[in-house]
Length: 369
Ligand code: SF4
Image (cartoon, rainbow, N blue to C red; front, side, top):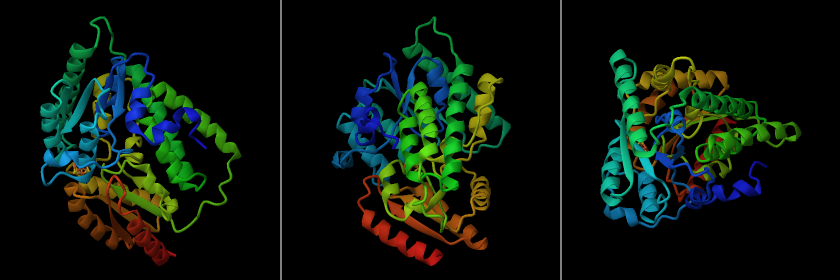
């Protein structure tokens, strides 16, 4: 429905997608985590591309590099990298101040791919203080300077307001899609596919794709989409393979709190305050489990549960992701207090336990019915 011939390749093969991208000769800058301000990259005339693990076969090549505590998501990404998956990227921005696994991979990457430009953007772990905001704004300024001196013509102006407007528009379209998922007009899977494309394609192309898709919905038949029970899925940043949503039972998802899901677009950046506004918006976002703000995440979850009349919550744990594993016990206790049933499901980027997920999900849905 949304994947015309032009984009079908992107659904199966990330590497090939990168090689086929038409970006008018713009330099390609990969980035880890949705905390990296894509507006800055775009405003400098560069093309931001989120690093994802989808579309590769596990090769095991990463085993000799990744430490024993490294998560399954980063192992798969390193496999892809060692097989030339990111060779077309001109640079990569890592998010420091996140988790041990990611911080170690950034050091490794520098060693294994010495010719690639690597940048560590550090985020404050506490997000609510004035000092943290001022720190992050300086980090954003340093990022601009660094990208500018490495990739940008000295005459190029930073067109931040224009870029903020474009990305805000993308967020508004995705917010509309999220409300359609909640109203059971479209499947969560369809929104997830568009989000995947939205993090890879040039923003101008993403906006026309979303406009086209929203217009095509007038003729859609949603009668086969199940109306209940209503599921919410939450987790960290290792769930980027949208094939997971094809597992039967996940067609009951009406809302999410995922890094590759609504956490990517449930905020808007003020346009009049330039870098200060951008910093403020990124600071006030709902944090990933790597940030120290469990209270904010729980309050947000409660709001999602209420607004979307949720019957049950799935906590998706990426295998060997410590930040999620630590958080889930606490979240489950809090959910018990408000009498919302929940289920922890462990997953890997290659979905090798697909059958097990299906069985556990089916049992959980039966319990909720
Ligand atoms: S937060 Fe979890 S999934 Fe993300 S890089 Fe760290 S360990 Fe891996």
